Picture 1 (cartoon, helix red, strand yellow):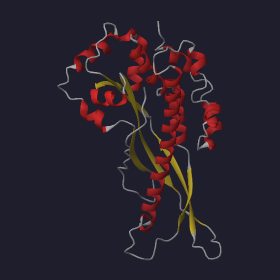
Picture 2 (picture 1 turned 90 degrees about the vertical axis):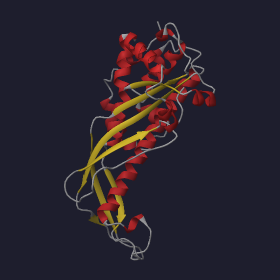
Picture 3 (picture 1 turned 120 degrees about the vertical axis):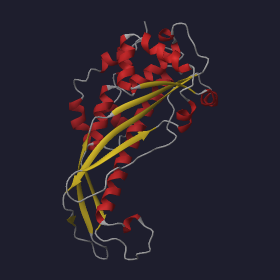
Length: 288
């Protein structure tokens, strides 16, 4: 089972400037803090999980590697959700941006002047991280043939789908254009973000826009994980016709049906995933 997120963290490490590239480091997370705190170095399950990873079949090892999968235990969380297992994912990425001199727009009568800002964004390689949460006493004799781990690693497969990685880079790296007031409020005591200097206000707007993009990417990914849970009856039934079932995940048609909020990237995205080897990707965790 894949649950929706419980918190979000976005951090910009750079000082903003009008010239050159501005570098930012961002982490968007749907990993609950409770899960992070639950696992300590003294957890005896760690040794068991290390043995599982060592004994994993080649396909599963590839998923563990590309998804940077960590195993944890959290009995209270599982009990609260009445589940035997849960999987969480994170998107981690770095980006930098720059903008040209903003263009003054002619104001309408009675309105203040706005500036048109065009921003170019470069996104470095996106990391996909996962946490598979199991009960402390879950110790199957043959873990990699267990239905529970099959189900949880299908969740890992969804959020490491090669089409999603392309979607992340295309969406996060798309140019930005927005309007911003030319002048901040005249009241120096106004506790208003728009009272910041121009470069700071642009930086804030860029961060807000990136956050909106990430929320939409999380929504799409979560919706497909929820669909998988429904179709597999929460893991009690295996997905056997895998090519057919996963064929429309992260496709242009699926995104349009889901009312993807950034349709302007879809033409370029559809071309970029035309040869994506998603079939082989989903066979890595295919049941015996």
